[in-house]
Structure formats: C-alpha cells, structure tokens
Amino acid sequence: MMKKLGSIEAGGTKFVLAVGSDRFELITKKRIPTTTPDETLAACIDFFKENPVDAIGLGSFGPIGIKHGTKEYGHILATPKPGWANTDIVGILTAALHVPIYFTTDVNASIYGESVSGEAENVDSAVYFTIGTGIGGGAIQAGHFIGGYSHLEMGHAPVIMHPDDHYEGGCPFHGNHCFEGVAAGPTIEARTGIRGENLDRDNQVFDFIDYYAAQMAFNAYVNLTPEKIIFGGSVIGDDDMPRVREYFDQLNNGYVQIPDNLIVHSHFADNASATVGDWALAATLI
Amino acid sequence: MMKKLGSIEAGGTKFVLAVGSDRFELITKKRIPTTTPDETLAACIDFFKENPVDAIGLGSFGPIGIKHGTKEYGHILATPKPGWANTDIVGILTAALHVPIYFTTDVNASIYGESVSGEAENVDSAVYFTIGTGIGGGAIQAGHFIGGYSHLEMGHAPVIMHPDDHYEGGCPFHGNHCFEGVAAGPTIEARTGIRGENLDRDNQVFDFIDYYAAQMAFNAYVNLTPEKIIFGGSVIGDDDMPRVREYFDQLNNGYVQIPDNLIVHSHFADNASATVGDWALAATLI
Image 1 (cartoon, rainbow over the protein chains, first blue to last red):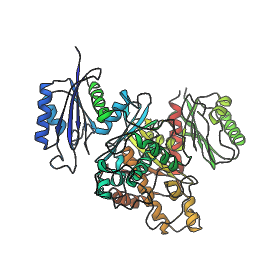
Image 2 (image 1 turned 90 degrees about the vertical axis):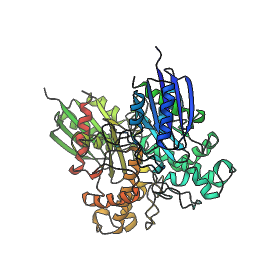
Image 3 (image 1 turned 90 degrees about the horizontal axis):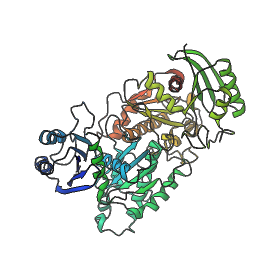
Image 4 (image 1 turned 180 degrees about the vertical axis):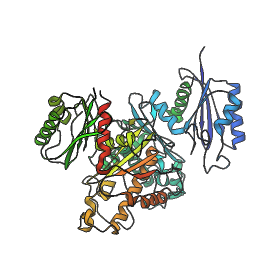
C-alpha cells in the first residue's frame, strides 16, 4: 500500500500542513496561523487525524533542540515568539498522532528538498539561505546535514557593513554585526519607513541587501565549499542573482575557484522546497 | 606483519617526514627545508626509500586539488610560493614510491589527528584553526572532512575589524577584510616593526589577534556548530585562550548555546597532531 507522508512547515507567522504520496505528489495542504502553541498544535493534530500519514517531517523556526538524547530534543527553545519558548512540539504531536516525526530546522528541510528535486539535485554539497523575517541557513554534504552540537545559525555570522550603509542594525543580540541584523526583511522598513514589498526595487537598500547576500554566500563558501548556494525567502528573488554574483566575485577577488552556477535562486514557488524536504525526511523514518 | 605509516607535513618553510607504527608510535622523523619542488620532493623520495612505508598521509599547504577525478587532483594549485604552483606532488611521489597517498590540507591532517588522539577525541564534530604565516581551518563531522567543491578556506572569511585596529591588512586578495589579512603572524611585524616572537605579549596587537581568533571561532560556530574548536600554530598559545573565550562570549552575546570547553588550544607540541592525522589517514588506505 502507498505510504502517505506528512509535512509541517512550522513558521513564526503560519504553519503549512501538507500530505503527500511516497512519490512526493501533493494530496492535500492547509495553512493555519501561528497563534498559541495549544491552539496551533491542536489544529495540526486535527488535520493529521483527518488526513492520516505514516510519518511526518517537521521543519521548524528556531532555535530548536535537535540533538537526540538531550532533554531539549524536540523542543522549540529560547525563541522571542511569545508563548513558544520551551514548547515540546515533537512530544505533543507524537503523543497525539503516534507516528514518527523527523524534526529539523525550516532551512534544513528546504535544503533537503532542493537536494531531492531542485537546485541541489545533482550535487553532493549545498547551502540554502532564507532571507525573510529572519535569516537562516542550512547545509548538506553527502546526504547529511552539517551541524554538530546544534543546528546552524548562519544568519548570525559576523558581517562587514557596506561602506554606505549606516544602519544601526536590527538584531537584538548582535545589532549591525550579523547578517540578520542588516539584511533581514524588517531592516528594510527600519531604514526607509516603508515595508520591503512596497518599496521601489531601485532603492539603495536592495543594493545593500544584495551585497550582504553575496557576503553571506562568500562566507558560506570559505567555511563549507558547497557546490551550490541557493537563496529563498521573500526578500530577494531571481532578479537579484546577477548583482549577488557580481558582489561575490568582488569579495572573492580571484582567490578561491568556484564551480559554475554556484549561486542560484530557488525555483520552487512559495517555499515548496521545504514541503518536499519534509516529506523526504519523513520517508527516511518508515 | 606490522604495517608502517608515512607522514608528510608539506609546509611552505619546511617538510616534516615521519614514519610511524600502525599504533601511531614514532619510528623515525626528519625535517627538510622547502626549496624547489624538484629538490624537496627528491629528498622526500630518498627518505621513504630508506624508510619504506605501506601508505602515506600527505597534509599540504595550499591551495591544493583534492577532488578525485579532476585534472587538478593531487596538485598544489595557485600558491604564491615560488616554483610550487601546479606541482603534481601526489603524482611525482606515487610514481617514485608506489604506495597509496592520502592527500589533504595541513589543517585537515591536524583535525584528523586531534580526533584520533587529542582534543577532539571524544566528540563527533570539531574545527582546527592554525594561525601562523597564514590562517587555515579544517573541520570534521562524523569522521568525514567538511568540504564539497574543494577544501575549506576559513582564514579568508570576512572579518569585522577591532574598533581600535587601523591596520590596512596584509592579505593580497582581501586586504583587512579577512582573518588572514589582520591576524596572521606577519601582520604583527607589519603593524609594529617587530617580529611576533620578539614582541612583548602585553602589546595591544595580541589583544587584537585574540579578538580575531574569537570572531573566527564564533563564525565557525554559527556555520558548523562543532563541539570543539581547537587552535594551533605559532601565533597564539594556551595563555590566550581565556581572552579568546571572553571575546567569543561578547560576540555571541548570549545568542547561541555552546558546549562546555568549546574553545581549546592544541596540546600537541610542535604541530604533532598533523603527523598523527597523516598516519591515521594513511591507515585508511591499507
């Protein structure tokens, strides 16, 4: 009998729930708003009771506990998202649904999806960055996620400011000293008073963000030398890629050799690489 | 019969050749100066003809070609070291010695050695940085080196300058925009006119270097989340570790949780972690 796979994209704004076939074809999908843990997880449980699956891949906003055998495993940790800190998301869902759950970060789900059927399909190593409300990065090498003591926090790596950018930074921990602090979506409105989606793309702030995306790619490259670096999220798109590549080349200045077509934008619409990734991770459990 | 293992630490100043038992006990060792490829590799060949081994681990200065199946494999690539660019070091040694050679970077050899019997012995993931004439980093996770298209170039990651440090930088590619450009050994003399080994340790430049070492560790942590970060090389020592840890905590500012004793100095004297690593890598080939 065909196995059914579940995906939960647990985001700070919405949860996207999806059921797929074991060939990763969509059967049904639902979006629910992220409110309280009680309410949101009850809605998840209702959905998967109506639409039973054999296993679930759960890619979550973070920070999260992913180390098996620790008491933090399966929990959302010290998130600023009200009410969600220390939520035992895996424990609650497992107790109600009685199916195995693969728990990882949203960006790990995305890079896994890209490696199954996307931009990273034909390479052995790749990095996925999302630039949205926050900035996160996930990385894969030879089928395994990069990460030791915990999951990666690539958005909080040190950043050299663009010389014309004098923004004081939006990261509550690192100010303008990390990528998230200078290039996440909310930094656009903080600089200009206008939300990113309403701002003219010629605005200098998008030039800054392309510069930071390039620097983030360069930093990832020297630390991991992936064969592919994929950008997703709502802040930059395919149109930004030529400028990101140009800035990357300026930053590298001929030092490291890079593979052809290193830097690309995800071709999945609507973050669907995470859905495919969740399904594929769920499939590893059954 | 006991197998014998060979180690070649191929550095820009000297090559260290060593023969060990299959239990990694030193049998014999020789240092030769790095002159021309012809002369230096001939001396390597003479040594291993007099002291035959079953396999060799070769940890080399770089950049090097480590991707099997490419025409650059086994070569030293575009090094500024006169005469050495495009030297087929593995090809020349294999043709003369007829034993398998494991070819990797000097820092990969060191992190492998640390994982066999050193600071990374009881962890699954670790990073090794050397701060010397240049800065390099190697990383291991679950017994495999991190690296996709090529080997890592962690010393060339972007760096935020210390606010009191106005040095223009010594990296020919990145000026003061990478760690090597502001924290490698030669930057000490470039700033002060005095070679590092002759300079009072209270000089502010060592404070800068500890700050950069901490930032490099923080950058490695958010990109790889290793359980251990080990410093080696001639520029900083065990005495620097408290200040490096303090700067790390300032940079992190309470954001990521880290394991106890994350940052340590190598306890191997004289870069011997690379020798052990070379032997252990050689042992994987026989």
